[in-house]
Amino acid sequence: MRIIAGELRGRRLLSPEGRRTRPTSDRLRETLFNILSSRIPGAVVLDLFAGTGALGLEAVSRGAASAVLVDSSAAAVSLIVRNIQSFSIEKKVRVIRWDILRNLNPLRNIEPLFDLIFLDPPYCQGMVAPTLHRLVESRSIADGARIAIEHSVSETIASDILGLKLCDQRSYGKTVVTFMSYCSSGASL
Image (cartoon, rainbow, N blue to C red; front, side, top):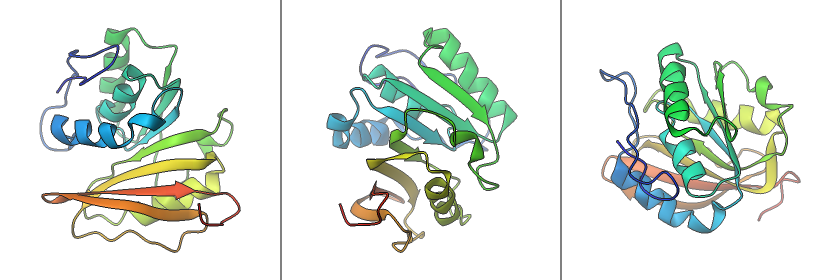
């Protein structure tokens, strides 16, 4: 795995051994970032279920102002920290080890609010809807924020979460990327 574009282009990402972490492929990551290209410069990014940190680090490489990467695995967090250090971007990236399914309370005091969020939980484990609910409850999302959710084709995304609106959905083999927008008043964007 490598950083695809931007300031860190071509730099290799350390990846975990085994199959516990399922990193987003370079090809899908490139497609995702092409779709979101206008939202990246200056963005405040949140990468939930960060794994290797590839999505958040790619965003920083492409001009995001900052990123917070969250994962519950000690091994994943250690790997992310090593990637951040090898790229010398410690001032732009913060890593939090936290059980996302418990709550997202560590995000409540982070300023500014997140305007670009990546959500890439383990497939087919029913984590998307609870995470979206916790994300909205955390009050850490800026109005107009875009959320990109990577999930299995067999998973459906709840469309009844207050403040979230489905914008787009694209299939890539066994993977679907769902794009949602956020409005704190609950109105359509």
